[in-house]
Image (cartoon, rainbow, N blue to C red):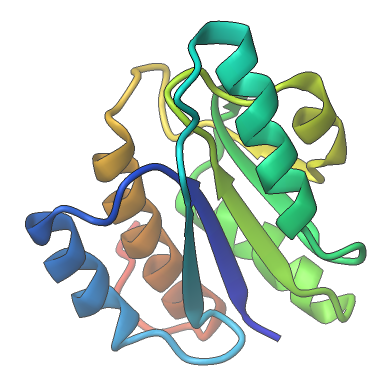
Amino acid sequence: MSIRILAVGKKHESWVAEGIERYGKRLRKPFDAAWLLLPHSAREHEAARAEESERILAKLDRDAFVVLLDERGRNVDSPGLSRTLQGAFDAGRSVTAVIGGAYGVDDRVRARADFVWSLSGLVFPHQLVRLVLAEQLYRAQEIAAGRPYHHV
């Protein structure tokens, strides 16, 4: 088991890649992460959302616990995220995190998600979301292991 991250869009910008690599080196099973970048659609609005959502759905494993990052999702603290991920692992499920494109995802992806997670009420650029996700996965791992990275 490990975490798979599906992200719509171009490759990581250098500053993002550096941060993702930094946290990625620290991640251990089952919290280790593999990134799959899906191309964004050349279309706009609903047509782009539908095309990108189809690409996402085609890459989701049937039994995976799917975490969709969406600003309209549930806001949880870091210990809550750690418990959510550890619960999926304890149930024998792999985890796939999904970061949609600029127009988001359609209702099919939202319906497939086991957990819709909002990082904040703020909207962030996708590159920054990738970096925050990488750090939060590391933090979740450390919380689950009882190590002192996370201070309350």
